[in-house]
Length: 137
Image (cartoon, rainbow, N blue to C red; front, side, top):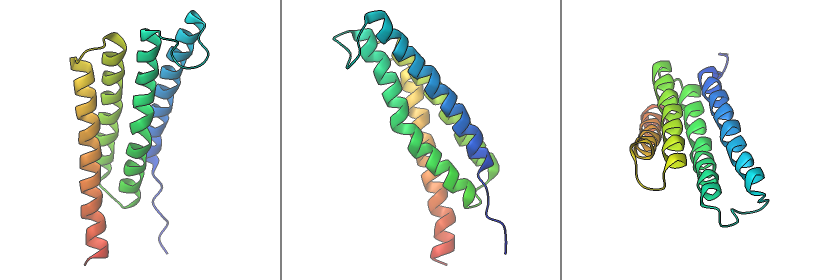
């Protein structure tokens, strides 16, 4: 009986995502302490923006990491898991930088969301192809 694949590549990108999560959390906490706001954003636009940076990251990170882990466990190409994981991290950093710096549309925000959605799309298609070959053939 073959040993199940362990998602070590995904674990690497999950660790990077965890570090990014801590950094974004610290930025929100620091702004809360500066403004002495415990709950919500207290009408402070900078705190509201920083909270959205963290929230936006959290909204996408779980799904992407699940997709990457499944892709790796289902024996997707290791290079693809690395490429998608790297693009996700770069995209989330770009998005955070863009959203933290300005409220309008900018290159960082745009690049971040495009990369994130492309990662979700590519991982989903790859999984459908791999799993489709197993369950329909």
